[in-house]
Amino acid sequence: MSQQRTAVVIILLLALVTRSGRGFAQEQPESYPITLSADDVYELSDLNVQLNGLRLTSDRVTAVPIRTEVGITGVMLLGNGEFQYAPEDADEISGHFRGAMLRFNPDDQPRLISFNKTTAETDQAAYEMSRHLLNNVFRHCWHSGMDALIPDSGTLAANVYSREHGALLISTSETSTAVYNFTERKQLYATNWSPHTNATEQSDESARSKAG
Image (cartoon, rainbow, N blue to C red; front, side):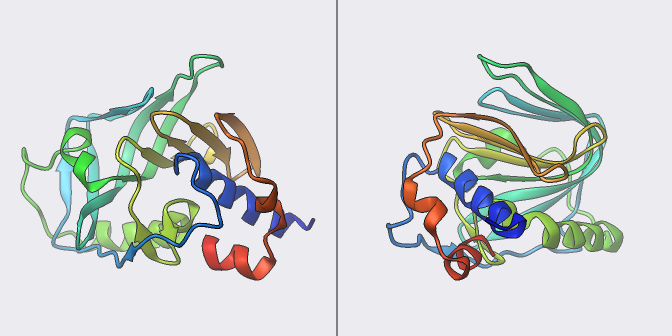
């Protein structure tokens, strides 16, 4: 199997982790166009996102929501912060991030990250940087091309640009987790991950269609 195809298959299998056992044979779920806006930028001084043992914090970060017609399903973070993921049966994975993309269910957004304590600002630079990062990481999880698939409730996926690890995806739900280093093309951790045999037998065309 070629390195390119191997990477595509890994991305597909990571999507399985947060799908509560849903298989490839099932019908593709509904997807939604996403929007970022230069007039929808927030400066946060108390970022504290926590779910399923994954935590991201910062005392100053710029946030650009990823909006869909069914609500906010993610956010682009620009600035310095820290992250920790502490699995029960493995060493902690932690570090400092310089930027990140978070994905979650819109119903979970208010308890994960709130924009009520500040007002939206117009920031063309933050918008352009967020759009650039989004084009690079959006297809790492919960996507149909550049449209959004909506994560299950209780799911948090963090694509972090880490000083220590490079480009890192930590995708967690209430029952399963996968951590993959895109810089090193290396899986760091997975639990309750039972890839279906047919996952590695997907054609290149099918894999690229689902993984972008």
